[in-house]
Length: 194
Image 1 (cartoon, helix red, strand yellow):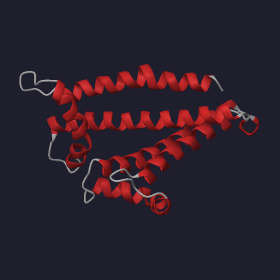
Image 2: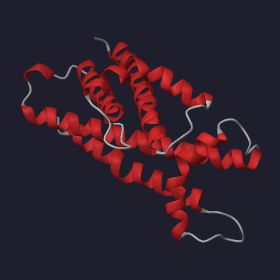
Image 3: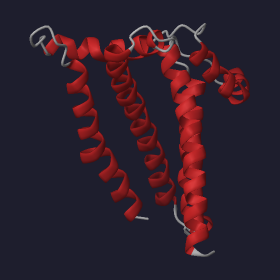
Image 4: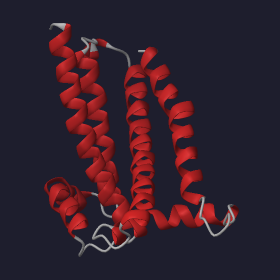
């Protein structure tokens, strides 16, 4: 397979499967943070993910407030993505040892964690921007429910600075720091061991 075609396919597969993982994770976090499902954004996510969540939920029930089936679907989607990318790079998946499969599984788990942090990073960022521009948009209740557990935690340690809440800014900086200094390098190092 030519490099150009391979890169194009990797881009398409990564985009589609990352978007699917994000929708599964949004559904998982919406349920965990009790986002009102009457909202159009929440209904859209539920509609997009029902095709997979409903059948898997019959096999894997929720554990209290934790929707294990949706979280498992996010992980499986990342695992499929990791395997597809290695296959498109002509990695000999069918003849490798078991340690490679453990590495691919770990990379998929890191992918789920990275996308989770990214979801919250953008939710906090969008919420902060909307609070200045138009705090009464239809998406505001969804963002508020989604981000309030994290921001409440940060507000315990970060006092107001002249009536300005800096917890959003601190969370955004810490999330980016975690992604760029730990998770992305860890994923890259694991893939180099293949």
